[in-house]
Image (cartoon, rainbow, N blue to C red; front, side, top):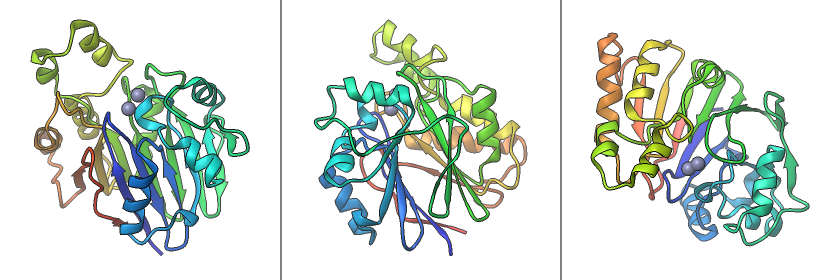
Length: 267
Ligand SMILES: [Zn+2]
Ligand SMILES: [Zn+2]
């Protein structure tokens, strides 16, 4: 039985990913409205009752909008680190505070949800705390690393383990430099504790490529400082330097900001 992956939205206006089997699944982040989320799932034959848990990466607004609704209205357990939960408790971006649905996850301590083994790992980013997740299911290792200030040893280790990788390509360095953002904001994005740029992820993927990596999805693209084609080309070109062929050695996709992806079947 294969694994199914769907991106419901990806970018600074909302992030939400689904990973599941034919019977059940989990969500990663809940940064879009309930109605949009339910519709995208339903369009792909997935009911909310199949969602076993929600895992939150960090407490920035674009990742948490529907956390309260999913947790308290629909009774879906919400997993996050203690610090992220504290951030959620203080956040003005969620209407309902978590009580019964609150679940604490520790970094590097796997949680078992049916046949999914989910491990959180630390990511440098300017939030209360920030984690990525690795989901192990049968022979699959699916890894999400979003809102990545820079690729430190831990992040690198998890990226290298992935068969299926959802990873940030937030901005193009030149577009950010020449763009309209204020100097402090430009600095915040690119100072190593903000977001990952196209060339950083491209260079890491090319230099660390292993054939067990089957699928790459570039996520959390900036609307102002990136283009899907540019992010794709940057990774494709860098990998090309190492003789890695996109579509043959590895699949590469760019996730859309506000429209759901196709439902990817991972073999
Ligand atoms: Zn974000
Ligand atoms: Zn963030």
